[in-house]
Amino acid sequence: MKPVRVGICGLGTVGGGTFNVLTRNADDIARRAGRPIVIEQVGHRSIHPDCDITGINATTDVFEVATNPNVDVLVELIGGYDVARELVLTAIENGKHVVTANKALIAVHGNEIFKAAHEKGVIVAFEAAVAGGIPVIKSLREGLGANRIEWVAGIINGTGNYILTHMRDEGRAFEDVLAEAQALGYAESDPTFDVEGIDAAHKLTILASIAYGVPLQFEKAFTEGISRITAEDVEQADNLGYVIKHLGISKRTDHGLELRVHPTLIPKERLLANVHGVKNAIAVMGDAVGPTLYYGAGAGAEPTASAVVADILDVARDIATDHHYRVPYLAFSGIDEDVSQLPIMPMEDITTAYYLRLLAVDRPGVLARVATILAEQGMSIEALIQKEATEGELVPIILLTHRTKEKQMNEAIREIEAMADIAGPVTRIRVESLDEGE
Image (cartoon, rainbow, N blue to C red):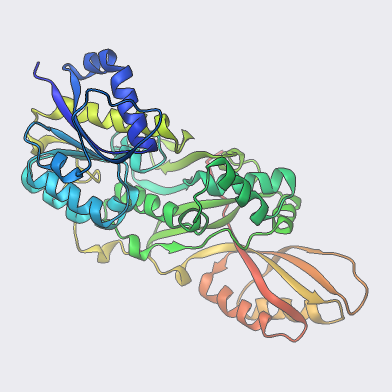
């Protein structure tokens, strides 16, 4: 069989891992694909130290790879938005299939890229864009194809999970654990995308589109980070029987789709509550299969390369297939661009329970007034923790509420923070049961 010729753009951590896996496992990969898969060319700015490209056609101009007539599949591993978009569209225009691990590119420009690929009859594969080496996209798009997906919830950023795990296990502050994660290479020098939930929102956008058959709508995702979570919040959540995780959550409701990333209290016995360190895990609830969980390494050179090479294998197998019979990129054929029947809900219309932590002056009537404000917004208190203090001192009050709309909670917090006896902002963490169907 004629070899499939691959051009790799980007030889950093994932690119280097992909190069090494393709080279090291060439015989097994060829047997699985039914034909050899060879590296025709690489485009790079720098080369990962573990990657030896001696004898390989190399260039510092990645667009040379995109226009090389000998390249069948372009593997985009440069990351980012603008250059990656131009590179991928150039490759598609030149009739090349594309494999990418770039979640930001797919979440923001995927609709445009998939349209261009469909028109040219080429494949765009992106398994590695979500959760590294965990094959969750293939599972959701194909393995669960018989199901009406009810909800998807996941730990889809290893940096945030590493921080929250060590805050819980060791009672350390956010800033301290973040510095350690940066020193170990788990967090970037600018950790904003990870700790503020932007990276997770990119991935959740992709998962939600595949789960529900709607266009990619990253701009509508609600995003909140973990930088305001304190060691005390982690301790009090534990006292209440919960664990704090930074979750991406998407749910189908009668009013539309929820699409949100934020710190979340989940019961200790839930499977997601027991995913630690830099690991990722995604729980999916289908109406036929019930709950399923996908767990593993969500990042790293060879775990992510595992997914990249699996996509290259799929492309190699499908290269002679009429593209009208291929699995649709986002699982559903003919996705309706009119999303009015299944819109993304604004965060203020979403209903959850809440954990609240406030710092109050310890004097009679303060807690009663807080309870009154919550009651006026239609909320009741499920649990309360108040530490002993000398009258007149500041004391933390921890409240767990029953479910209510975000809009009502926003108004209640505004009124509580306006009270003279409340010091500083109220900490709010949403609470989800994530019923796994026990």
